Amino acid sequence: MAYMSESGYNDLMEELRELETVQRPEISRQIAEARDKGDLSENAEYDAAKEAQGMLEMKINRLKLIIADARIIDESKLSTDSVQILNTVELKNVKNGKKMKYTIVSESEADLRKGKIAVSTPIAQGLLGKKVGDVAEIKVPQGMITLEVVDISI
Image (cartoon, rainbow, N blue to C red; front, side, top):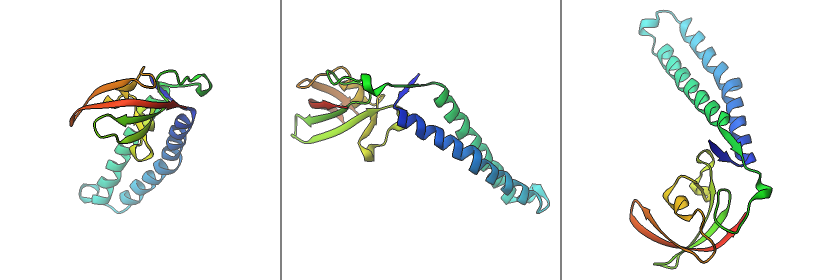
């Protein structure tokens, strides 16, 4: 089961619509065009278009599985008592005093450039259930990191 925000769910639905209604017909057109050029055994364009079609169908199926398994979280019922999915958490690295801010989201919504980390990441897992003022020792690929929860917001 994949918990996600309503906007994340809508983004997935829009991506699926784009793949099915725009990209799928375009690849079908490319295959037909390559087929019309003759001998398929030595037709690189045909092979490339067929491979692109296979990749597209895999992506469509993966999106459909995620959407079928999605559970939209009612954001009005979120709490800031402790860290949970869809919370924005302000943290302080105890070792160097550096502050950072992350929003904990589903895997499909994660985007580190926007400060959104997946709930399955070691940092998010180490923070879930923590309250403001709590300190979390989290094992990351570089070793152990100690983070203090400074603020929790929605």
